[in-house]
Length: 526
DNA sequence: GCCGGTAGCCAC
DNA sequence: AAACGTGGCTACCGGC
Image: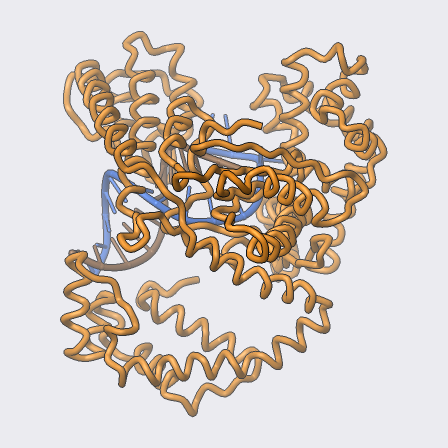
């Protein structure tokens, strides 16, 4: 719905004004609003880029600063913005926010969300502490890894160019698609073209091409992608993010970044540091502690499935967790009607796919594709699954119904997610959109409750840590807390974290946590 | 050169 | 790629 003629900054301002108007806040008397109105009506808004516009509106004093930014020499800080520009803007911003308090508080009270707000308010300083603490990385390690990966990339490039018979930009999906499907004539039956008109070169497609590829170019491209991703996104990028004052990397956590109530991490995102692939794991060696300290990583075991058990009250699920059984093996046992100790690895893997898939609202179509079953077989297994876990079936049905009827669903803590799509004038005629909304609806209470629980744990934990220890929280990765702990505190703090996390909130099943320690983020041992 | 969309891919 | 949810980052690329 964005107007392409209005720069993003003006959009944000316009959105702010809309919110204020919705709550009956009169924005007319302050210069903030005047300024935004001017920006929106200024003919320059339609024709200039953001920085030109800022120059135009804010005058010559900003030009020098903006030039510095443009050359990568500076970031805007309040100290650099002329006081007569910053003061009215900041004052109006604060004034508007203050005036929003009564109507927002009223709304929260009506919806029973004051306690949730209190939790978020208490979490804020915890997040601030984590951001201030930052994470240490081994710069030499990253530099060496970068050099090693450069060599690998160069070799892969040569291999790919030789097979292709020409040089091209491997990172361009357009060019790569032309090489694979036009020049090398790899089979394209059943492959879908993507929006930009060429054939997709995504991993799944490349994997499917392996069988018909006698040249080895597919393997080389897959490896080139993996190495390139790692190098570009992490190995080369992270050392540049080190704060010269602290020598550490300080991420930003957004408390409102994820619609389910999860945190989001950015600049850099430290919630998606690789761990699954062999090469990705090596990267984690580069995350280190101060001398005399250790990492302590504590994560919730199967927290979303435990929450599912609690919410659905499904007898089988409840019993499995109360008896501390392996949930995926137990699921397989039920699914195949065999004793749990007879479950094979493949049967367990299959059950795991279903268990995780259902949290996200997976259907038989996807299950078939993931597991190689026919659609009919996948449907049979889904039916068997829901037959064996009737509580889950009821939950999915009831949650979809609630989303339609009430227009929202909520977590155990009352955190809501709204689904305006069910209210739209389209009247549910948009099948794809409503089905997506249904999947989002069944996922929200589970993912959101997990987010709520770990937030509670973080608040309690940080209070204890600040009162009694030098150990500090560094990162939250959705179901994991990473701490940096002086060695002499390690045993005590480990017990504290385990205790706080596992008792953060009482469910009808135990909250199990697993603690590991180590000198880097890879070699963590229980 | 900036901006935003797209493709692809990293995590939980 | 996809009828599996929540995010963020990089590279490319076309528009201005």
